[in-house]
Image (cartoon, rainbow, N blue to C red; front, side, top):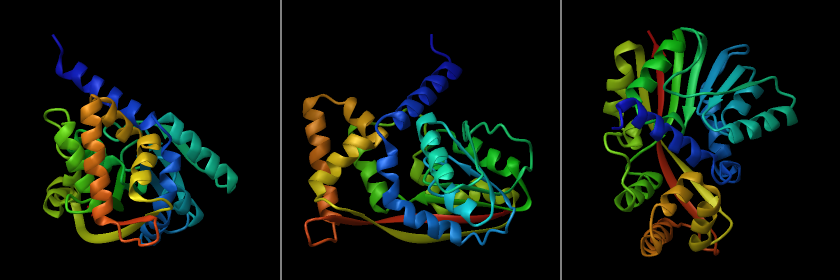
Length: 272
């Protein structure tokens, strides 16, 4: 009979496989500009010890290092970390990248002045563990900063469409709850001296029409690939039609390309 531990291990293994499928490095550049904006608003001090959790290919980590922070990035996907290392090397930036889990960070208590996660740790299945780990490794007076997709924004709607046909594992809270201000305050506020949440917009523009944009995601976005793989041919056709319709409905471009506006919640919390 499966145990809770074995079920969790299987879930984590599936999540790791999903992010290592495809090539997220093809997707990441389309939000890299917003990552630079996110980092710029941190007003980092030179020499600050910064941990980027679920760092992916380094969208936030690299500009943080450019700003003078001493950056450590951690992610479950080894292939994404390798891309991040190559980006750092290309810019001659001294950065550290570790394979690891947002729910079990292998760093001492109060190791970092700044702990960040942009569209990453929100997808871990046990958000309360993520919150406790962020609070544990952040120094008193340090900052925890997150960028989390909201349920009302375009990415949240994509996840809702997919979730109807490919339900998430039972007992796993929706990732977009990290984009809900009261939930964030419940998870982090009890051990923070100050917590502010700001809704922000990011335009994601792709050089092809909605149908080809969806095909691009199916080719390179691991979780999208995995969702489709769990459906039969009819289910895949249904999901593709619904997602293509969503992309077309929200497309603001008029030149044959695709541009959609995503909404996220920017969290800045000062550790007590």
